[in-house]
Image (tube, rainbow, N blue to C red):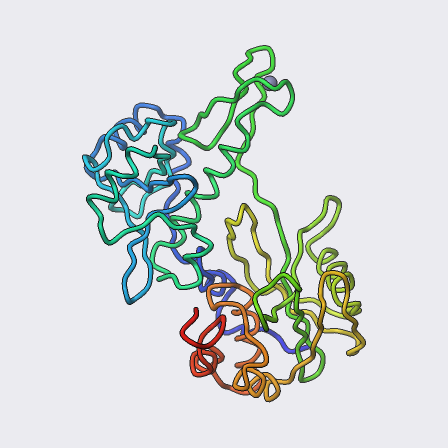
Length: 336
Ligand SMILES: [Zn+2]
């Protein structure tokens, strides 16, 4: 089968995916050092990543939407809801995720009139990649903290420890510890000869076609999950699979593992999950996009990246440019 571009390694390839492009030193060795955390929190190098009702603070401009961090002094009582969570450092600043209340939200917006609290998933369609990963990291940790407020064994309240990275049952007779969890999912572009397979789920926006994807189940390898999902969604049998890259996907808490897979043949069928399955060569894809017969997922997604890299290998052209020429990611008439 056609190999992915091996001129760059997988670390570099994964870092092209949104949310994976910003790297912090997570300072894991300091999480249990309360005096160090306190000192960092009170230093002028501290930056707060506020979350209000699970929404992230973004400045909105013609260039797109980008993360806004609050400096010390901009946010009174950063621990008004719970203690701040240490995210890490970029070498200059210490980043902390903080939950803020309604009063603090009003204060923040009053001092940042260009900013809004936005659902990161909505924002990510049109997001400046700069620092998107910090927001994703903060959001994923908060999701875990709020959904594990009580011990899964005895039902007592959990308390946050290790600067936000561990929950411990408050009943000393239980003391169960839990750690941030993510849900692995596979996403795969199936190819056969010169064509790739795209599916359409009935709940997606009009004309949207994309790669196949699904959660990894207990007792399954990533590759087993690829084989199962492709058959469940498109009734296609695979003969080989190549891992490509991965992407943190905090909606709510996935790690997307991206693959290419070569099908035995082009026998396929629509299913309960995919109302339509199509095979397209690069030339057919070009025509379908220009005629607005299909709309691909936004470029921030690993799905788009998998398709775009395949397209480039097939015909040497840039799929991002073609899609922009066709009128945008989700459709025409200026709708993004
Ligand atoms: Zn317990």
